[in-house]
Image 1 (cartoon, rainbow over the protein chains, first blue to last red):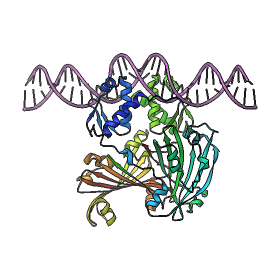
Image 2 (image 1 turned 120 degrees about the vertical axis):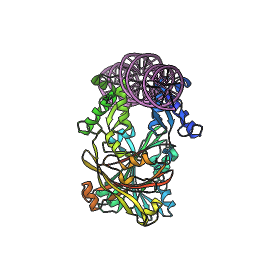
Image 3 (image 1 turned 90 degrees about the vertical axis):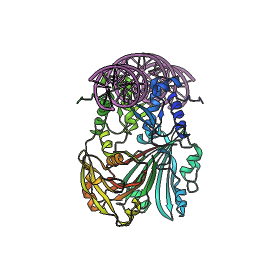
Length: 236
Length: 236
DNA sequence: AACTCTTACTTGTATATACAATCTCACTTT
DNA sequence: AAAGTGAGATTGTATATACAAGTAAGAGTT
């Protein structure tokens, strides 16, 4: 096990993030220029630039050619589309939750899944399929591929007792996630499981989650459009 | 009028986008490596790299150290995280944008809208209905109620020239926003506008935006599920 | 006082180079 | 046949440098 050295541009990003989050650098205040960071951290301008550039893309900074780099209108990122355990969500609504485990096995991944999970086509990954119920009505089908290198005992779990998300969080804390949200028509198979007609639109969220070790899992969450809704709250 | 020279990395981005959009490069197929692009376009590796890098951040490509760069899934994608101007979004994809203004008037609000806009039922608010096109295909219907106390000249705008979002941002900078995302079947009326069948699922985003003065507007954005997708990226 | 010009600073684009880390695949060894 | 090795390709990180382009502020002129 070799300790991976942290890249220099990441160190600078971290430093700037801390200044902003701790309130030492307020909104709209000027942050050090590329040349100043170059000196402070003894790096090349291109490396300092990369840190500022990526933070700008993430929305923490705003840059203006000729005048400088500034702290943006407050951090939006953190509390948007928060990833919640669906069981908690349902309990919080005062409703009854239970789950049905439809599949839990090792499978060979196709090319698409392989790329997204950072595996090779034909490699084996863990697969789970769980149907979540709210007050005995099916509310969400969760189909999930899990990176076997990062989560050892996935196949020994009982996902009627703990949700896959809760288990994975306990094994490998999330550091990052991407979502793709689409409106789709469910396949016949899925329509049947969700007890909906074949023309009911479904909200489909594809979520890819990372831990510090790499891509952990790839989940497809399909919910009837008339029974489920996503919310998010941004602060600028 | 000085003709601005297009940056080289943009030329390469454009080239790759075209290949993908025209279907010459299919999903998951390999795209030229940094070194190949370096030769093809007679640029340095860092410039070729920048093109690939930015397209990866935009979600068009997927990269894997050691194996190469590949075409990602190509559905249109926007971000929940950042509230973007749809015109910019479409332009950034290298596509042509135009809009059609279906309505722009003052209306009496019903109770639901009144509550959400912090007005009284029966008060008057501004209402706009704009259809956005990507390459002459309708991609999103935007129906928006605007708080007349905070935005004076809303009715005098021409929303084929500037999007409502862009205008509102210039008048009253956003400080906060909430979203609700649902999958729905469009009404007959809306199906017709979007040129879709009445069983095509639609992604519907309801967005409420605040400025420092209070609730600015209430927008309902309806897009065909097969042509539009939301994305978001979280870092913990 | 108002205007223009210059200058310094900052970010944007581009190149050339070097080495590290990772993956693939053919080849060799067992 | 299976396992291990190593070369080559590919992306990741980092540096040094150069010039372009936009901004702001001060100097100088009218």
